[in-house]
Length: 243
Image (cartoon, helix red, strand yellow):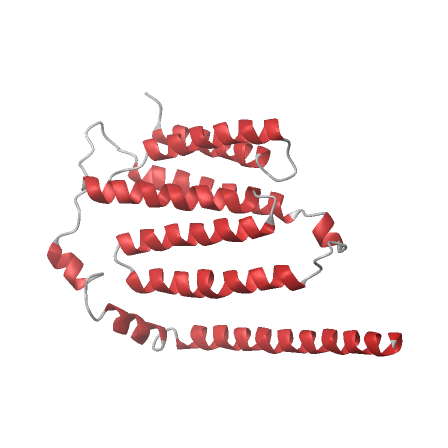
C-alpha cells in the first residue's frame, strides 16, 4: 500500500502539470489534457482526506471544497478577465461556506462583504476604465498567471505534505476522528458572544496591528486619489490643447 504522503505528492505534481497546461496561453488540446490531470489530482487529494465524523458534514465539506478549488483554478486559467472575476467571486463563496461549516460566521460574512462585495466590484470597474483599447504592454503580455500558478501549487504542496504527515497513521489501526462535543462547541464557535470576543482580541492585544493596517489602507486611498487627480488633470490639458 502506498504511503499517503506519496499519494499527496503525486497529486501535487499532477495538479502542477495540469494547471500549467490550462493556463490561458496554452492550446485547446493542452487545456483538455490539463483538465483531465486536474480532475485526477483532485480525486487523489479527496481520497486522502479524513472525514469530519458525520456524513452530512462530510458531504457539505467536499462540495464546498470542490467549488472553492475548481473556481480558484478557473480564476487563473480563464482568458477573459471578467470571467476571472466571476470565478474569483465563486471561489470566495466556497471559502466562506467552509468557514460557516466550522462555525466561523464572522469570517465568512467578512470574506463575502470585503472581497466579493468590495474588491471584486472595484476590480470590474478598473477593467472598464483602464486601457479598454488594449494598447498597454500589460494588456498584451501577461506573466502573472504563471507565477500565481506556481505559487499556488507550491503552497498546496507544502500544506498537503504537512497535513498528510500529521494525519498519517503511525500504526495500522488509526483511531477515528472524534467530533467535538456540544459543550466544546458552546464554549467555542457556537458561543453567542464569539464576535464580541473577536473584537476585544483585535482591539486589545492586536491593536497595533489593526492600526498599522488601517494606516496602510488610508495611505493607499490617498495615493489612489492623487493618481486619479493627476490623470484627470493631464486629460483635461490634452483636451484644451486640441481645442
